Image (cartoon, rainbow, N blue to C red; front, side):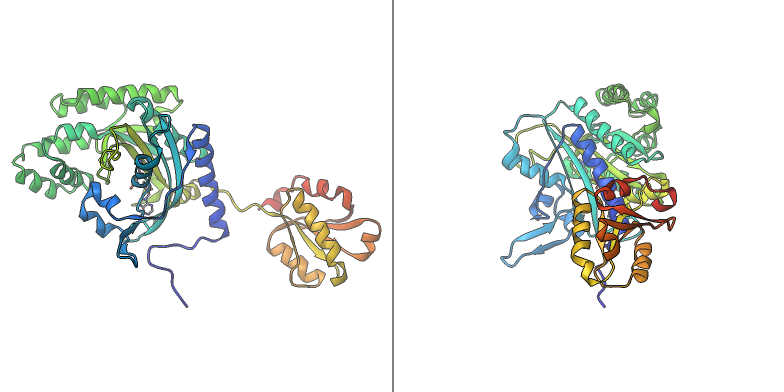
Length: 428
Ligand code: HAM
């Protein structure tokens, strides 16, 4: 017996129906917003991830040397890969460039419920739009995806990292350490870092600032806490609220939260996270914001904003809110009555499949009783019994598996008979 690696998952048929449902809702909505799909490799050069975050990031990655001695890593997210792709190949395309991608990503984390080492992200990026409309479009897609999945209890929290960055008069490495301690709410670390930087006086206002959350009215209070710094960034958030209203995003679907700091190092402006309250400790189903990576990778300055949703957590959330679908039933299970009927039964099967029905056939050579038991166990809506006597009259016997009702149906009208709306009890 082999065990799967720690922090990974196997997904059965019932899981996959839910996962594909969530993914397809995102894809449909992203396409309707004019985003186009791209794909990047699962393995990247390690340097792509250390370029911005420094060598410290390596312990959070699946990093390895290949047989040619190259330093590689499994992608921990999509943003760096997409920006690499943008700088090398896509930058001459008309802007804004709006792309999305979905797939598995890998992080060397301590696994727990909802936190895995291999997980699945739904990711969208806008490159080269004006900041405000692009941020609004990004948020509208992220929040709209929640709605499309049927999640009603999730809420986005929107902040602006530009405000915090502007109030931290340090170089980028020191800023990153202070922001990291704020992100983790590690105030002992915050105080010791500020002491090291000779700015212990900032501690109180920073703590007060990241505690502020609520509707648009908190923005006035927040601007006072930092002594009026970052006026433009607060106006930016007010304007964002107006645009979100035009998108039809309700103020109940988000709050402003000055404590959104984000774990990744590349964010520069508007940042957001989406929480699902019914998930416990790992409740963050998505996050994103405006960032700068193109220049780090050798490109021209260009605005960049985007987000990723964690599919694994979205599915858990949909299960908790009752919006995750069950597998659709098989429409027809075809039973040849005796081996001599198999060729004709396969023809019937093929015609049902060609008409777009989900149809299966006995592959074991069981007798009719055992076959009906099997049809029941796999939750087929109908069993089609193909026997010599009925076939002579151009018919087959159709058994409604929920009611047990059985009737002879002409092969010509078989598809219509199966397309009848299934009785409630059959759509378990
Ligand atoms: P992130 O916040 O690191 O952002 O990840 C996005 C989402 O992935 C999280 O909100 C969470 O739902 C899910 N996630 C993260 N870690 C795990 C894990 N270990 N197990 C299960 N799910 C997890 C990014 O990755 C950025 N690249 C988002 C972005 C795109 N920003 C701009 N563009």
